[in-house]
View 1 (cartoon, helix red, strand yellow):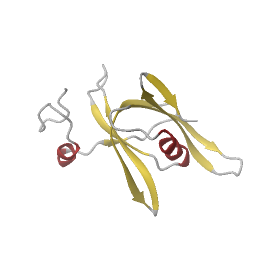
View 2: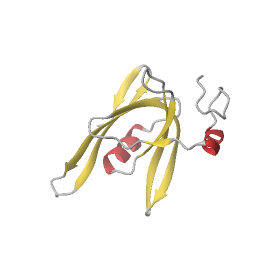
View 3: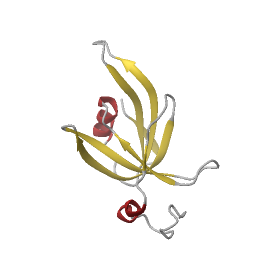
Length: 127
């Protein structure tokens, strides 16, 4: 396992230890951006009177960046509904894509996110 922080030795994941040193980065995507990683933890957080699932993902290392922890807050209706429908569990791979902002028939602006979970070797996509 890669060393994810200079003060934490390589080894099994421990969210509490990691958060004591450096919080995960929050995903703030640009249109068309994708994110894939292993779900480590899923918690409900409340902000402004609304519950929103927050996913902690371990994003594997690439040629361009080291392995890192990323939080994805499902505060928008589309992504929150996808998390509710798919019910991801820790250990599953999650794929996200931000399509950009859209306008509903009622004239409201919303964030269009696509989400899929890998189960039993196949990707299950939220509809």
